[in-house]
Image 1 (spheres, rainbow, N blue to C red):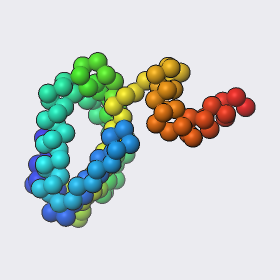
Image 2: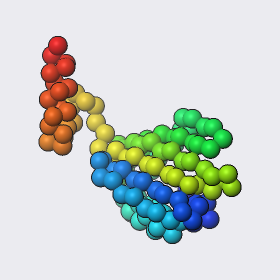
Image 3: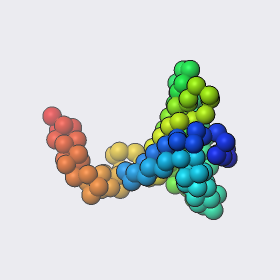
Image 4: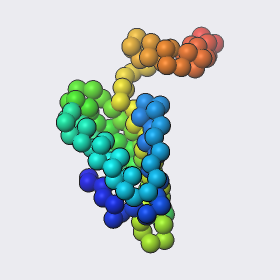
Length: 129
């Protein structure tokens, strides 16, 4: 999907959370520029996704997606889109997880331990109970 300025309200916001790193973009042009960067990088590295609608109402769409980055690295995410009365996007949030592995794998456990040691230890203690 190509995201263009015409679909976003001039004052819209885009929040991208990628593996915990947050970016906030304000305004249709900033959003178009951000998506151009994301989609360009994805195209160069074989990023492919399959999306599924999770929830819809008059003003909001929520979808989740799964895919690969670099043709082998599994990734996934969730997005929410809020629309104004004119049908333009006023808020888009996308949360992306680029390194998705089963929780029992050592690499996944180490990543959690080094990235969020308190959380990793709390989970380990809870599992022992």
